[in-house]
Length: 145
Ligand code: RB5
Image 1 (cartoon, rainbow, N blue to C red):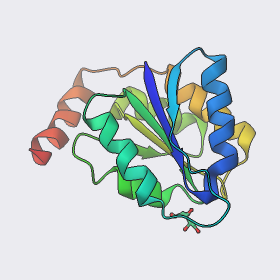
Image 2 (tube, rainbow, N blue to C red):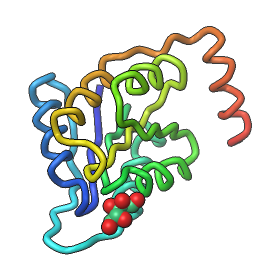
Image 3 (cartoon, helix red, strand yellow):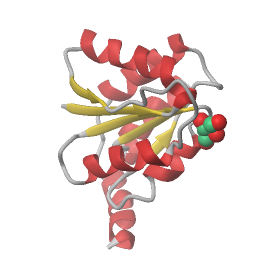
């Protein structure tokens, strides 16, 4: 699995937590920033990361901003991306099992680094169940086409 990671200025600490988790899990990743002291715009990071999942260069993306909302809205504009905004362990697992989400968004002003790490670990480890869920996901893909 290859993962691309990005944040705006509001998500730098959780982004570092996530990259340390990916190292621990021996998962290949690229961290595209931001390397920011000041304020940046979340679409400038979220959209390129989502595009690199949609084009097959990466299997998954993990995006962090202050709330996770800007990143999730941006990522979900990219065709082929199913971005889940997650702040608890239950939906981290179920969005993989039911939605086959390929992008995870989290908000650093919403949760702390410890929970973010567990959410990312859960999301990276859970598998899509297919079956009736594949039928539902295919309706989204058909709409996009
Ligand atoms: C930046 O101030 C903040 O708006 C951003 O990190 C995010 O929360 C947007 O959804």
